[in-house]
Image (cartoon, one colour):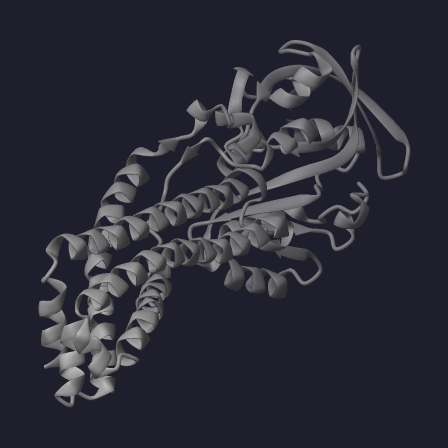
Length: 405
């Protein structure tokens, strides 16, 4: 009975009730848009880390990543590659030879990580070919070709066709130098890597390091993200002499960023709903003041104060929850559209800033399905909290005083 009375009371002032419902819907709509944008950005960053930078899993000599000493190679690397490629969860696998060194030009020098790659295999792992802005992919019939990032090319004032010198040390500690011709200039979504990573063919680097046929790194790309941990455990057992790491271990800052954004998402939603709570409290207080004589009469006739409290509580909860489906549906429609079409942020002029943090300018917002239960709890919590002050105001009324007004 209390519930039916609460429902009728809501529609006694339709304009006010609909306004509150729309406010709830708009607040929820705005909050979900922010959450979807953050989630789209983080998923984009994770995809970029996995598909363009480090892969799902990497294998190295246990001591290699301590100081990137070229002597710590993966022995029998080709056999290991063949074994890994036969695992059903593995999509692509590629080797890399790596050395830390200096890139020198007539205009200056820069410290770089030299990545020796097999062109066809590397393109499967990091889409290096698709990042080329000037020039062409490696010509496997030619020697000493190099690809450098757009940021590094601008810093050293070089272009396609320019000659550069790479200097690094071999496994014996001797200084090695090689002259290379810039084959292409690439640009990725991570400006920091563009400034520090250069790519040459693995054969060229192995010849200078004198480590053929070995190499330093195996990069693995899986079919499904959820297979990362079980496959990593399997690789640790099969290749116990090697160090196997997931992308989360290789790029812990990305995982930390993801967890932090998830926490901020809930905080943002709570702030939005708290702001709406003041509007709900104000509206319900107005409703209570308008019905002072009515509530006084109910109390005079012996209505339990708990029933009065529940009456106000039900009215507030119904008003709040009534706007929730509209907010959810409207946000789902808009997010689904941009999830397919993409949201291009380049027109804001923030391309360089986003790239500095490893984000692309094309964002595909994703509806936060896994956060819906938390969002519903926040909405219900808002309704309950918003009802407390008006409900307490109502039950504190004295029948005699209320009937005089």
